[in-house]
Image (cartoon, rainbow over all chains, first blue to last red; front, side):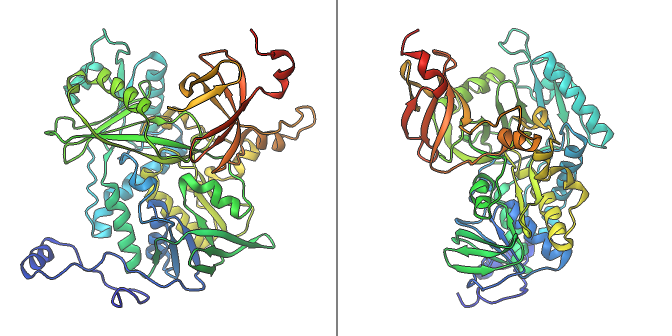
Length: 426
Length: 93
């Protein structure tokens, strides 16, 4: 363990074909991707939540702003919450111009992430289809396509014949319960290996001197004279002038410790995966009407997600209703996969806001920042959120790209309505 | 499956109901400032534990009920008729 302790920069083992062969031949063990540390009494910034948002914030603080005296705390383990439970879909075909710009920046960061982190995140830009089953959703697709094009994002509305070419197994006939009228086709969208993103950011931040503390629960937040002073943890107190809440499903509970109320309701979201089969589905397929999204992993499993459970809950138990409804809807789209078997199902917690946009930036408590309200679309926004939050921490000024996602918008009535593009369309 | 004890219909599958949200005191629309009204609309306690909630029996009696539910275990320990409806409801209709 002694070798893993210690502070400051260290040079991690570089991942390459050469080192793979060398270590394969010599049997030399791989070092741990990130170190463990004793908790210190103070840091320049404490980030709560070691998911993609917290780790990316720490990583960009270190790379872009050279702030490395930072602790990332997590009650559980790296990527154990929503960052490891989502369905790993990345896209930028949103509805509002600010939403499109924001997610497009994230896609751009994801495109170069493997090289930046020296960690293969398996970003596969295989194309993303959002199906329209009625005139209203077709109109929304057209609206999104035009907003996307204005912002320089590749999106187009296509008809059933073109959908059939992209996904031959899809039933595009007009004799189904919900006939497919068209789709919003978004070629840069795709899937990514979410665990690799979490681990890559953790390894990158650790190499630059950030301390990652797993199994470290935040029990309280110290606030005096309207400013944050530090946190109480299960391993002792920490003083810090900046505390960032990056905790998704638990964000209301953490913010309440600082006396900040949020417009957030926590809903579970269930997902499932089938046994692996030969690859037959290239694009990511989403249907808002049928509350389902499907993609096939490189290993061959079909990954399914649905809409959130219809009531607030912190329970992550699966339900039979979910599996039944999901299977019915998937078979509506692709009847030929009826004999595939579901391997497992799981749930994650989503922090839903009233306008389906996140809550980012400053709060009434000085130094207490939030990057929450990510609902069902947080993973794809990890890199850009981390970059923006790091800039806010380093400069004290809210970056333009997240200005409209501020907490004050709810009291001032400036909601950023993304329901048309974010409610189910992952 | 979660069973919701509707005070009018008895125990029913939660899928028959619509979750309306946690119960909060409604400010007087005549005197509330826009900020107070928006806070009533948007801000939530979002408790991890016992919560008092409003549910609507959509595919049943189509009436509202107040539920005491544990949001971590989904255990339900009480369902009552909302205060405004208690006088007239009387268990019938």
